[in-house]
Length: 181
Image (cartoon, rainbow, N blue to C red; front, side):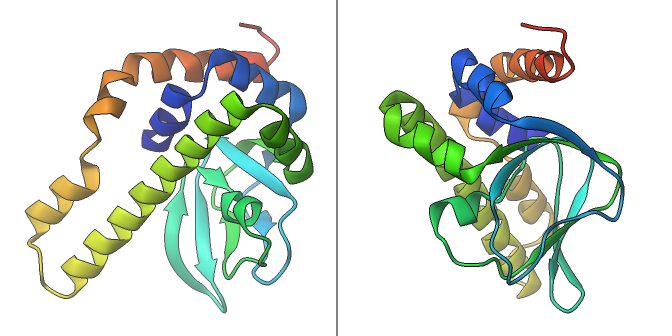
């Protein structure tokens, strides 16, 4: 749920409404391969619930994803095929937005683009920090407690918006399930 804080605290309510209208809400059983290494990605996925693994071929798990994570964001930014696969570990519900639809919106609505790219920046920064911390820990450069603290620390600006993000997540799920805002 931590990643949902990044997305939902920075996007406006109208952005969430647009994502719901532009996308499709789908369930995927465990074992579904959403992204295949080496094959172009056509959509951005927002994980609503469930757990997914990031797999480096041939079969090395290098990470996990969960509620609030974005999948397919790197292929939105650059057109290279992914180096990893993403597979559902449990039953997952995802909001799927086609890249071409999202790119059109980003070109047309500069305010939305600014908020959306900020979300991407926060998510990618968080991933890079986590990777750096794990790398340092693997090399014995940090102790376990320091590693845990760095890995789980949230930016103050994000913490200030936790209540907003939680409320928006409830409304997003309500919209996706047809309850409305």
